[in-house]
Each structure stands twice: as C-alpha cells, then as structure tokens.
Image: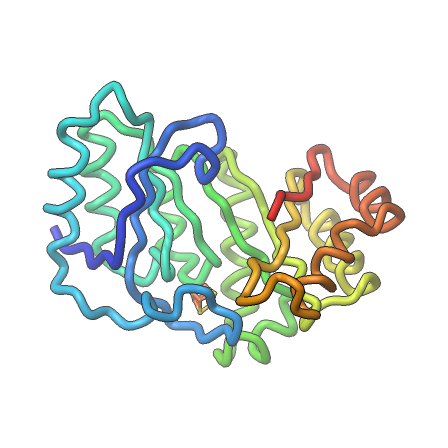
Length: 230
Ligand code: SF4
C-alpha cells in the first residue's frame, strides 16, 4: 500500500468535529496557490512507506482515537489514498478528509468511505486559475462540491478570508453563490498568521471576520454558519 506522508499529528480535537483524531499530512499537490502554508508538502519526497508508519501508530490507539484525518498537501493527489483509507477503516477507525477538491473523480470513489469532509472553496470558481495557476481548477473544485453535497456525507464547506483575494463585497458574493449552489454548512476561516500577527494582511483578515453587518448577512444564507477562531 503506497502512501507518502510528510508528517503526523498524534491528536487533534478540532480537525474532525466531534472526534478525537490523528492527522496525516499527505505529500503532493498539483496546484500552486501562492499562500500555501504547507509548501514543503507539495513535492512527493518520501517513498510511499507512510502506510506502515500510520499502521504502527494506530495499532496501540484503539479506544483512544476515534479516527484519522487525511490532510495535506492535497490528499487526493495520491492514487493510493483509497487503499490507505480502507486500511484505516478496517482497523476500526473513522476517516475524514481535508481537500480542495482537486480530483473530483477520486473524490467520487472515496465518498462511500468517508465519515466527514472539510472542503476548501478558495474563491469564485471562475477565478481559480488565477489563484492556483492551473487551467480548469475551478471546474474541478465545483464538481467536487457538487459530488460532496449529493453524497450526503457529513461535511463543512470553508473559505479562508484572505484580504489579498476578498473584500467585504466579494466575500459576500461568494457566500451567496455557494448558498445558491446548495451549500448549507459554511465556515469562514481567518488567514493563519504569517510572522508578525500585526502584519496588515492578518489584521485585514481579522477585520473582515469582525464585520458584524457582513456576518449577519452571511448567517442568513446558511443553516449553519460560523467563523473559526484564529
Ligand atoms: S490546493 Fe492546498 S496544498 Fe495545494 S497549493 Fe493550494 S493551498 Fe497548497
């Protein structure tokens, strides 16, 4: 079983809502978002022995962990992901996925295995290529969103309020488009602080997420809406 991983967090209480989980950081991604916070994970540098490492880690943790979150990088980049998820399920753990929806056909095949998905929608679909550097990336993200919503798998759709990508108006427009597409559970995330947390970008992100009038309008669009803490 081939799985290339760049790291493993032994315990998280926030990455798989309602569950105690470990996070596996999968290597590889076909996209090149300029703000990627895990650029060291983009190339695949390990030999695919990650499954053995994960298996050894999980064996003594029955009863201590509920599940495993596959994060990245972009987990869907690896063709061995389905086998690894099946392996985790067969050990009795639940499986969650953090993804940007880069490979909708792989996601389609994985959905029956998944207990929860966090899907990042980065920007309006038509603007994806400018952000990711990849033609057709918006179509893929949109297709993944449609598949996830159709599947009935528990999930959240989330967007990072990056002030380099959004102002108040464009953030609201994206939320309106997503609500019209059928999104009912939506989370806004702050930009993760880079260096000095007083940097203008970090403060602008925080200001967007404190805009009471904006948040009130967004709240009305979704059954469930929240702003994640920094
Ligand atoms: S899709 Fe995610 S992992 Fe890939 S470059 Fe963008 S932010 Fe980084």
